[in-house]
Length: 142
Image 1 (spheres, one colour):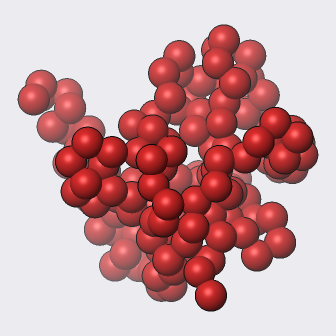
Image 2 (cartoon, helix red, strand yellow):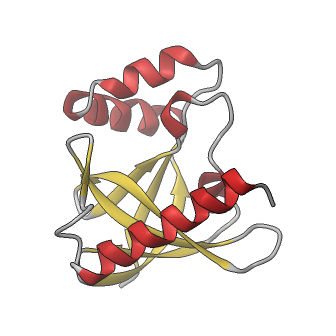
């Protein structure tokens, strides 16, 4: 593992610890959007990985976007999410088991509009890449 990758992992773990210790009062917002912690099993190892991601609400569902800041590649956490039926999110002090659905074309278009009306910089991310930036819907398990 490279030094850069180790540093990114350490920074992510520190951010997650701060989020948890403060119930999201610190590091609970990013780019004007709320942040949750997403824990999803790795698609190859099955080991849980936790990542802080911004989200929007769609009724009672949480919607996350695999933009990677406009990177040409989909983020690892989203690739893992594509292979998961369920995940666990932490929103402030709450821990919620959710089902995972990748938004289809028409639903993605509606959700993308909601997202970019709140955070227009996502349109710049989309303009930078050839891939269609995916969105996932995380629905609380009843």
